[in-house]
Amino acid sequence: MEYSLLCHPSQQVKNKLFVFCIMLSLWVYMLYCCVGYCSTTPTYMLDERSRRIPPPRPLQNQELEMLFKTQSRGLLNNESDAESRGDGWEENKGETTYDEDSGVTGALNGSETKKLPQAIIIGVKKGGTRALLEFLRLHPDIRAVGAEPHFFDRNYEKGLEWYRELMPKTLEGQLTMEKTPSYFVTKEVPGRIYSMSKDTKLIVVVRDPVTRAISDYTQTSSKKPDIPCFECLTFKNITANLIDTSWSAVQIGMYARHLEQWLQFFPLDQFLFVSGERLISDPAGEMARVQHFLGLRRVVTHKHFHFNPAKGFPCLKRPESNSKPHCLGKTKGRTHPNIHPDVIQRLRDFYKPFNKKFYHMTGHDFGWD
Ligand SMILES: *[C@@H]1O[C@H](CO)[C@@H](O)[C@H](O)[C@H]1NC(C)=O
Ligand SMILES: *[C@@H]1O[C@H](CO)[C@@H](O)[C@H](O)[C@H]1NC(C)=O
Ligand SMILES: *[C@@H]1O[C@H](CO)[C@@H](O)[C@H](O)[C@H]1NC(C)=O
Image (cartoon, rainbow, N blue to C red):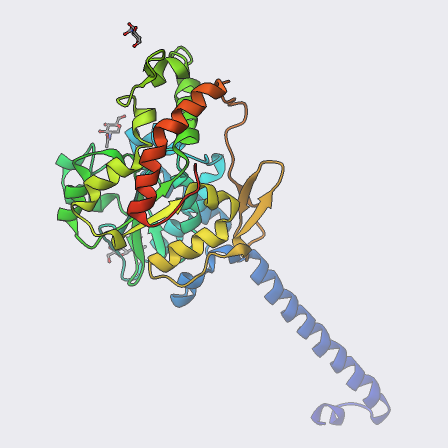
């Protein structure tokens, strides 16, 4: 009531109204500021992890973009380009957006360290390993190398410290991961991973070996258009129905044979076999298995996926963000070769015993036959 003392009594009501109006506008302004602040703060960055350690000050969008860019450039490893780009469901140019995790925690500078990976996606080429890695990167407790390090097959002589340096920094409780699909089919790799850590969790994304082989061939022929035809490479002698098992496109799909090498070092329960087909038809279901296997909370769920019927592939999005969903899909314009159904049937017959053995070894029928 003190302000009324300063004024003429007849003006009291007017004054009250005036003050009320000022207060109201102040409140509205403050509210407006708050809302404005929130909308300029990059909410998609505020995942579980960043909430635990509040950033010292809100980063501006441009700064974040810079961070993503430098981070992803740094992660790019020269020779891995061919495989990392070509594998499975290819990433678009927008791949850098998925490196945003690296950016923010880099800026937070908490108690971060580079650790050797506790879990590795070891295969298989064209199985869907890129899709799986991108799905996993939605999880705040996972930090993964973007490119394929090829440490255990091509860079082993560089040593574990070189390998560790490639890894993203992690906070306590976060898993470090990488993917290199050629590990699964390289004889020396199981022993080498074992000597790094016998507890390493191993994830294999597998897919119908026939469609995998065709997809593999298609990718190669898009880069080298003058390679011989699919049939020409598949058979050593087509009249004798002799399949060339030394051709990598055929050889990679003999999963049972490769798995035997691995089981000499690791028990079966250290592997998770992810169905490349289900990863596309039911990404949330398959991701539930993966998160369970890695001992993680189930964070990546159906909310992260929405199916794009035009593409036939799921798109992923951060549910809390307004950014455009990131769609997975085969590179446009890459046509699959016309392969005679008889050739496909012969390949099916060839793979049947290997598939059967693989189902038996893993205790899981992938339904390819
Ligand atoms: C990457 O390429 C640069 C030059 O293009 C080369 O100096 C460097 O050694 C390469 N790094 C690896 C890991 O191969
Ligand atoms: C991050 O931490 C390191 C060592 O702990 C320090 O040298 C560096 O200056 C820090 N960077 C920032 C941006 O605070
Ligand atoms: C392919 O196999 C057929 C039947 O076994 C044989 O007659 C022919 O000589 C073989 N061709 C070559 C190029 O080995």
